[in-house]
Image 1 (cartoon, helix red, strand yellow):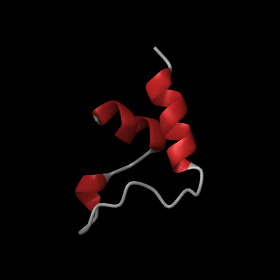
Image 2 (cartoon, rainbow, N blue to C red):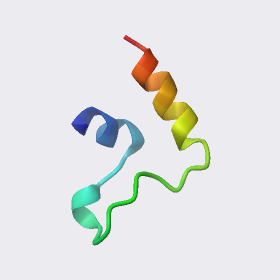
Image 3 (tube, helix red, strand yellow):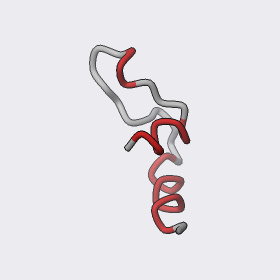
Length: 37
């Protein structure tokens, strides 16, 4: 998970309630990353 936090610039430790992303294309980007070896 740390890899994804760094990749998308997420900082869950700095928010009260963690949200994955406000990016509308986040799911598509995440799928591309997961499929990439």
